[in-house]
Image 1 (cartoon, rainbow, N blue to C red):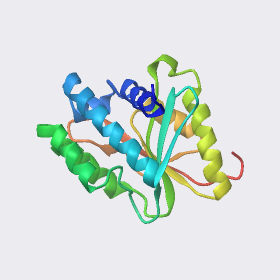
Image 2 (cartoon, helix red, strand yellow):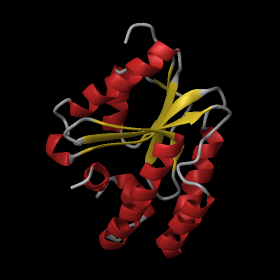
Image 3 (cartoon, one colour):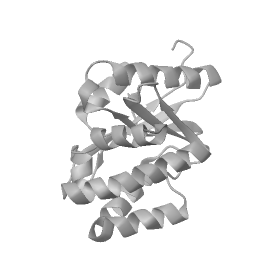
Length: 190
C-alpha cells in the first residue's frame, strides 16, 4: 500500500462518522465515495502548496496550508468544482461551510491546520497530540502562529492543552454541529 493510500485510509476512518461529516453528507455510502476522492485531491493540493505530515505508521495525518492573507484553499478551482459535482444535491453544504469558515478565518499570516485525522483504533492514546506537537514545534521555531476549526468539544479540549485559544464564538452550521475557531500564537516553548 502506498503512503498516499495509507493517508487516505486514515482520513476515511477518522472522518467516517463524525458529526461534521454527517452534516455534510448524511448517507454513509455517498460520504465514503465523496470523501475518498476529496481526500486524494486535498492531499495532492497540500503536497504542492502546503504540508502533509504523518508518522511512519500513518495513523495520524495532518494537512497544513500556508495562509498569508486569509483563508487558503484546500483545492484548486478544478478540484473545487469536482468536489461540488461529487457532492451532488449536498454541494450547498460544502458552500455553506466554506463561506462561514472564510468569514471567520484570520487575515494575519499563519499556518492553517485544514485537517487532522487519527485512525479510530488509536484515538485517545496520545498519537494525535504527539504528532501535532511536532508540527507546532516547527511553526514555533519559525515564529509562525497557527489556526484551525475544531470539529468537536473533545478535539477543542486537546487543542486547548496544546496552546490554542478560542478565536471568537463557535461557527454554528445551519441545522448542524458547531465548529470552534482556534488560534495559537507562536511560542518559544514548544
